[in-house]
Image (cartoon, rainbow over all chains, first blue to last red; front, side):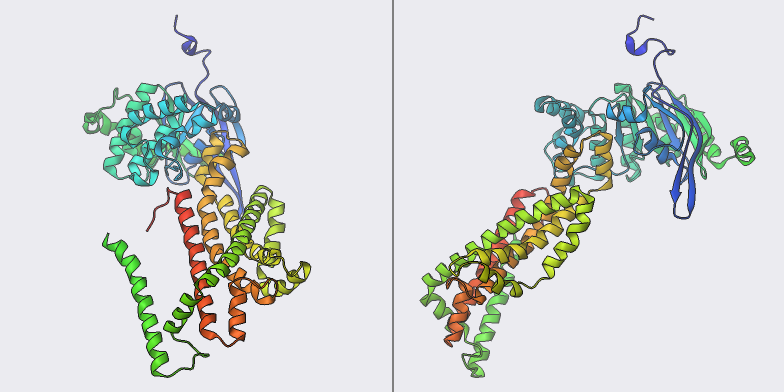
Length: 277
Length: 253
């Protein structure tokens, strides 16, 4: 127990993300829509948690709540032990969306540098960091290219590099590989798994894809729609992620488990619980 | 490479064909010169009056340029203010639409009376008014139509309003600005020429066109019209060149 301050025992170090009784109601024209209800979720430091569920189950909304891009109507959220707003102001997290959202008027490297510019890093340090990150995402020779010269997969890698730029302890990713073809997608998944191992960041990841969720996660959180709630969580203990693991029986077993949870077979208990309310 | 040649050669070929057809038509049908002079007659007038045409074009060109710069600056400033304050936005847009709907013909005699007859200010003012609107509307659109993802990213970076303006809003508005400028460049020359039709200083292409026409020197009037046409083209090309230099990231056809 002589470890550094960062690991001074599970009791004192705050969870990366902690949600208690979180709900979100959108006021629409045709009345109120409950996007999320009664969400309890804890992501411990260094954990990779994936939110999976049908469209409209509020998984993206949940991520946006953590990012302080929208506010909850019920419950409390803590991000690194702070309010989401404070965590955002402190830039505790890096974020990536389904669209890369690169800025056309900046070179690839300058896109990665953007969050660093806003934090007041000087030019040399910024460029050095951008070069490092381009190395990490496998695009070292594209620093001075325009984003429009890159393929969709390459743009998404740049977006991930940008999310990692300031070395955040928490990564929030909203279907970052959703618009990519299957081959690119699997390659980027492997890269993300490696990057997460190297950076030791905690990750909250939203996806539609069951194999993607199982491959990447320590824990898969299965959600159901209207209102969005957590029906089940599946612990995935597959050890180091390699390409071989995609063909392993334990991988398929987990995929099946998540699929059944999504279909609600073993989530019957919580469906009943939902009906009682 | 062949594409580039075709892009220059095709309009030139069409232009030459039109001129040849025009020449033939006037000769064959014996059209009277005061109705439509031959291109060759117009060309003769261009070469005969070359130095005066150049002087007149310089006068009109500087009026157009001064008005273009003033109108652009005002349009951009108004767009910046409007995008910053929602209320001003709502007030300015109908006002700008009203300014745009105003015919410059109505303004020219009034502006001329407001200043001495030797002043170039009224003409420049007219150009300014004409240029203002396309710049204002386009820049405002560019400043407000920021991609939602860029908005959210900057929010997630806890960027200040100023940083957001400088790093996202302004570069986002640049292509829009140049769309407005390209439009305004041609309009500025038209406005500068037309403004001269309503008296004032006896200099410039518009003045020369009216005086040649009133002396029934139609081929000469046409020579000055051709010069006005060339001046408009110069302005348009300059705006396009500026656009390419300022927004190198945009894909070109």
